[in-house]
View 1 (cartoon, rainbow, N blue to C red):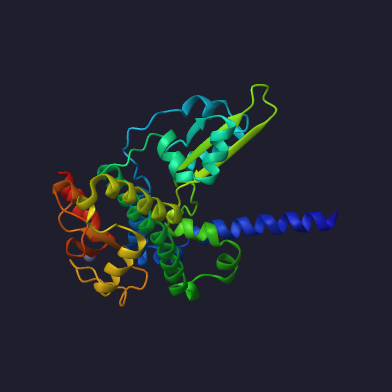
View 2: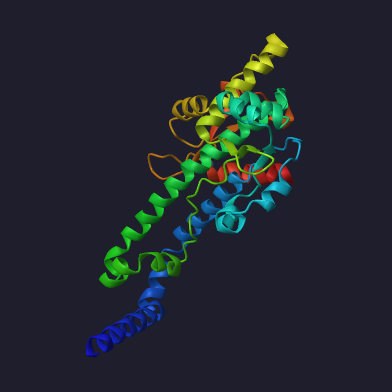
Length: 303
Ligand SMILES: [Zn+2]
């Protein structure tokens, strides 16, 4: 019995200690001191969120909604599905289609989800790859930067707080949570269920960075095959992106911000003349921009 009382008292003391600390002047001063940096981190977090929302604006056949709602484990998966901005694309198909999709995923995704091998679609997938890669890259840089900032003030934070209340500390300092899940990658599902419901097979094709890179090459081959000489531009793949960043010395071509001075700076590859204005993907028409410049460029084009 006395042990239980001691434990309860300790827990109460811990909560009280935290309550007092986070309301103390020294904590509020600390929070204000790094306000500029937390704001920058949160801006980048928002930007990453926008990058992840890049959608293939392709008019696909919608097989999805009904079976998506009916899935028996729908409720179970709900919290995860919320993170998925766009519902997965589901195709209810025969067993042989399901098996073939496993062997030749790209071919069957194009066929059953109506992705035509056009130059426009290819550009959309390249754009998606470019944005998703920046988002994945940005997430890691953001985590590093947040840890850097907190390490920088570590000596001013009480030992108990920084050791046992790290997550809450980040929140109290004003950092928005960083979503590290990769569930936003588009998913194409081939689903076969026998009429009695006893047999079922499923083939999921997830368009992660690796698959997007390969899909861009796959689609470009089909486009080139159709148009032959016309497809003579560069493909916006991870490889090209990296070569542009290297050429520009990992430095923003607009404001001069560089990874030399800011190791956790997110750099993006941008079309100087946008594709929508007739620009093409070529080494000459690509430049390195920091996320802040790219973001402001984007919003200027919108208005
Ligand atoms: Zn810049």
